[in-house]
Image 1 (tube, rainbow, N blue to C red):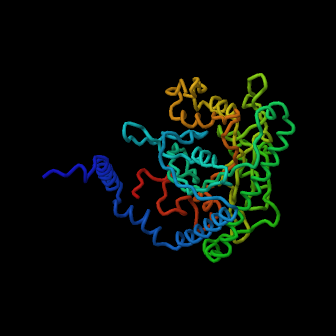
Image 2: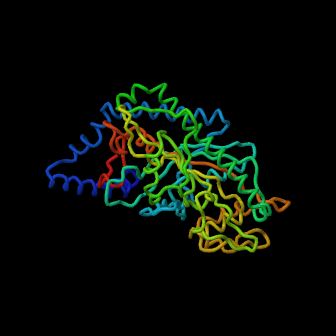
Image 3: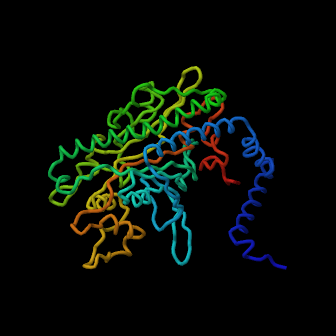
Length: 414
């Protein structure tokens, strides 16, 4: 009797064939699938290191989430698939597609657009979510360490207290720049508070687990140092490690990395309708920030610093949102609206049409309604790896049950 296809779907047949080929390959190399399961997974699951990591992870997340709740932020549901997701400013192998009801949904790169939409509600101070993230990173020539294909991110977005309208944006650049610098300072203080709350909870709840892993956590008494990317005399990909050597603090910020299309740059739009070239911006005119963390061994020696959180003040004016999407090659042309408010070139915009409807929406007085926000996403596994590297934790997979570093395995079994 043949198998019922509804009980044994076709994709699992292909998985079975791939596993059989993998088992045969292992046998030819002198090992077995059983040995791989035992050594790559079970030994790690049963070991002391992962237990200590999980205790630290639980304390870290508890402290940060308690801080967010105390600050008045509310929890948002996860969005794991939609018609559009974060395009990202770096290459991935491909964007996972999920066919359903004659549409092609995509897996979530990050919940950036979902966070924007939620912040339309004027009663919200902000939102946070344990965001799903599937990013099929390209393999590299070496073990990069910090990347996972499937990872956890604490995603946060807050409404900014005021919004600058277009006329002021165009005609009062010094005043607007000063206001944005103040908002950037407030954003850094907020996310420092969140990180401190997590670190403080770790020291209180999991100090012995830090010691068992051979590391320690020293919180600076003063504010986290803030560095501008332009200050580094090295290529931007080496800036994190370079700045890490310049400071005693285990945590610090780097600002001003030209990156995502939604990260605020200013001054950008011009009164004549043109816009400033992206290559002409200095780091002090790019209002984004990375939180960078380094580990510290029991003897006081530091490990290399790595970015664990990226965030920014966000573009909020319809004209700037559309221009940035065009400049970054995310959409091929600007949306064109007819007299009824419908997008005439909807097909050309791919999945961005509904988002652009809201981004360009205006109230009865002609004022844009898109929320002005700031936010960030902090990678939980990356933060743990940056903080805990030492005699027990060497690779990012050491802080996870299931791994999924793109350079570490041919096939992920769990």
